[in-house]
Image (cartoon, rainbow, N blue to C red; front, side, top):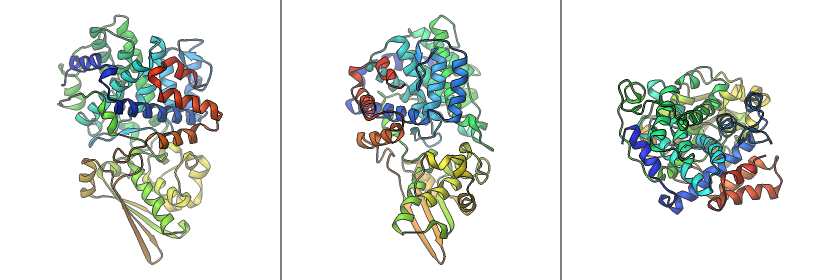
Length: 448
């Protein structure tokens, strides 16, 4: 399926009953993970800049701004709330050979529209399932990274699909919404190359806002190019190239990974390897002379130096996309959490010295393994006359070793305990676990 009409027909036809019990459960875990991350990001400098902008334009509105008792328009709520989910770089990822989008970037947009529509929990799960499926399908069959486009180019389409689904748009309105979103909001890859800055963690929030605005315009009768994929000078000709899609009943959610570490997706196995090796071998990190990582092409390209130096690290946006920094701080601290991205930690001499001793190499064999579903990493640590070696195929949270409720709840607790009391945290967990018996407004009311 490659046409706009076929995407719309898939979304309109998908019902809650089409979702298997396993898929419903996986979607709920993705929601809880995303909500917890958003709570952990509340008060961050970057997200507070967005909050000030959004609040300055909204005296009231129909959608809750998470982390406050303020409300805003659906697009503005999608902007702030998506930024909260995305900013820490702790969100989920869909693992495709040529692209790694983050389907959790869709959740806040769909929730905002769910509030507007007074949607049930079943409707919310179904619409989020639409977004996860569309984003995964486009990421797998129509990668855009190599052509100079950012992966949030997919997000504006998938978020629009979920938003249009939960708002109950009719078929032609839905086609117009996708046409507007996919025509007007294609993002450049320069966001993640060279000297990375704050926009890296905000670009998907802007995509979510644009998606919701596109859907509202279409709902109110504005027309868009309904042949946006297949038309002359359309998305396939200009953005992605030819592709063929077959949609599933949101089963691509099972190919989504959850992050164990606060770090870019492709760093997860390598960090796990460094943390484990230093602990098992009882290595004093101050004695490490060199760290070598053999990895796959995508990791080398994005966070290993293929799109700009990753050895000049002065702020968080650079640190969480620098393999040299992340491996160095993992060795020194034995963990990679939000604490490893404070300005003070980034600037300390021990991590700045060690990151200069990290070498990242691409191994074609590991690239082949990544493209068949692994996330391989081979790490060597030189300590005096000794070289210690470890290899990992994946990490806890990879689709081959998924985070189940116990692990997701533990991560949620870690991210939220400083803001909410135990009873409040438990209410959020139980509301998500039994979302079919709740509604969008009930969930959002807990995110104060």
